[in-house]
Amino acid sequence: MRAVWRLARLVPHVLHGLWLVRRRFELLSATERHQLIQWWSLKTLRILGITLKAEGQALPAGHLLVANHVSWLDIAAVHAVLPQARFVSKADVKHWPLVGALVEGAGTLFIERESKRDALRVVHQAAAALQAGDCVAFFPEGTTGPGPELLPFHANLLQAAVSAQAPVLPLVLRWHAPGERFAVSARFIGDTTLAQSLWAIASARGLGIEVQILPSVDVAGQDRRALAEALRGVISERL
Image (cartoon, rainbow, N blue to C red; front, side, top):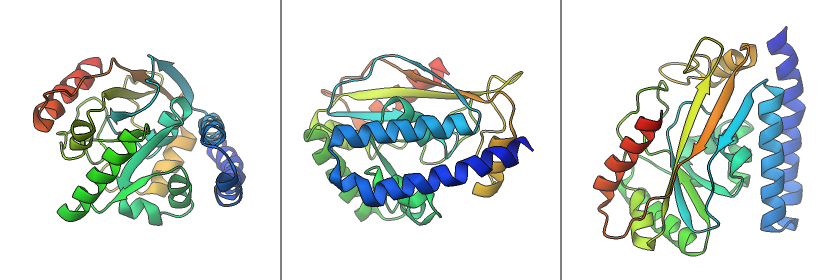
């Protein structure tokens, strides 16, 4: 019954978000859009019974945000704290029902991960966004992991920060639940479908997420592969 009640409240909230993206966003300033993104993300977490704890200090503009990746809800959790973040996401998310339109409206940059040419295009696009003062965000693991153990970090998109000489802001995401330092219900791995994951999250008791903003990393003189390993170490240690 808990899950049914939460999902019944979530559906109109998602539809309202779609209406805002399609009817209001083009009429609003960047600040007003960010305020709506943060409001919508916070309410999404609240409807699903997820508590949020945030620590650390964000940068004002022009930085690359990197975070570990556990759940499809990671983006909403980050936007609840840093609504200005423009995520780089795999292209097939754009075609997910409802979710795709929402993340596209939030300024997401989409990438065809199987195409090296497309990866280069997104690196250039992200570098231009950083130089323009945007906050660009991505998950260097490239896919979701179980939580405590990080997958290898892909370095390609870090080239955008190196090229733009923009600082990198590491972000740690830790989903937890009563008796579980790393919540099983939040995991979106293996053959789990989006519907199965949504039901598990909506059914959970006491699910929460900690968003920790770590000190920024200067990229001057850095090689992207060495930078990827250093960032993986910093995030893994904090986890």
